Length: 153
Image (cartoon, one colour):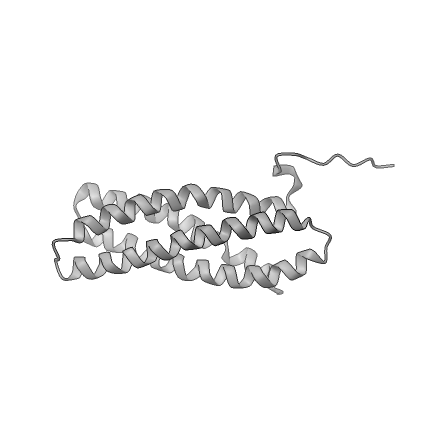
């Protein structure tokens, strides 16, 4: 297994996990169940960690796909979107840590952290679609907005 393969294995978890975490957090807020909210917080923290691992493996995967003749523009666009996504994932992870602590201590600000996490999770999920799509476009020409037509003789 090379670094590109490792990147492909890991990069889906932060995206899919954040989507699941958003749904779980929303259910926890609606039901006013702190255990469900804590589950979402834990998922967001794991997504933050796996996002960092995905970024690390992405740097190494970039070296491999550049040697395959992949457009540097596609790689750069994906990298930029991933860096923006990770800023949000770090913020969501930090808010989740604070949310966990505030729930365990029954702090009056616990509700505030849950709504901050919800807002950040929504924005992160929206951005994760762009990150995932731009990554897929690197090797899957069929999903690109503009498909390059090549003459085959």
